[in-house]
Image (cartoon, rainbow, N blue to C red):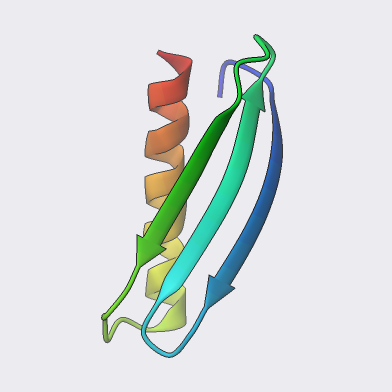
Length: 65
């Protein structure tokens, strides 16, 4: 990550889902609300976490551009 961020988040999960809601504020002070939901999947928790991480990295890259 090139920019610095303040992040406030709430995550959750269930048997077939994984989610996160976050308020991301970069140093420029322009906050973004980001939500990522993964649902209706038979993937195990580890795989859902990996997908959430990959999607989160993609969101940060978009914010940095």
